[in-house]
Length: 253
Image (cartoon, rainbow, N blue to C red; front, side, top):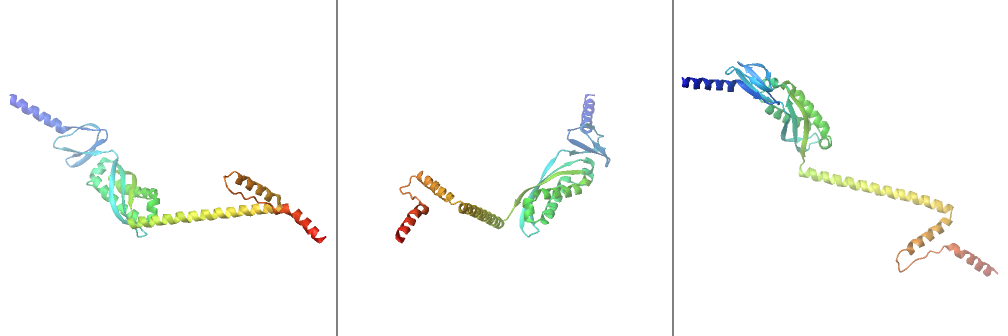
């Protein structure tokens, strides 16, 4: 009698262990009954019929998937390596199980081929400066292809673009040449503005000769403030003109 009781209790425990399942808040269980999908259940307590029902768990949390670096030749024939990260989540657990064998693996392969295709149609400058546009294009393509799988692609981000050493050196030389060109243009523009100001100052002094004398005095004042051993004092020639006129008159007499 005791042995039979133990057997019955054991069978009941095994039955309950096989029949009762608990799913977390972020999990859903796709129920198969005799091979046919009933529906997705959860979260919480799930009761199954042993030997008849089978449950496959699916997580609804956001998944971050790294895309391995891909060798890409851009439209302007530059060889680069590009990798990315994809953020997606399952929104329909039933489709994610019955429409694709392994949705994570399928997503990884689809992302690699799409990354090569989209980046291969872009030029190097677009890869370096137009990442937002490429990210949006990748996200739209992947989301369209994975919608029948019950998967929503939230974001796609290009992580790193690995350029060959020769291309990096060429770009560095190009950037340096561009900086030198801008420096020469700025210097030439400064010289032109200075020449314009000097021309305006010369025109003003030509109309008012006294301004030149005032400039002489200002220069002397500036030189006096410096600790120089020799000071050159400019004397206007107009100071000697009365003496020259007197000497000329005396010679005529």
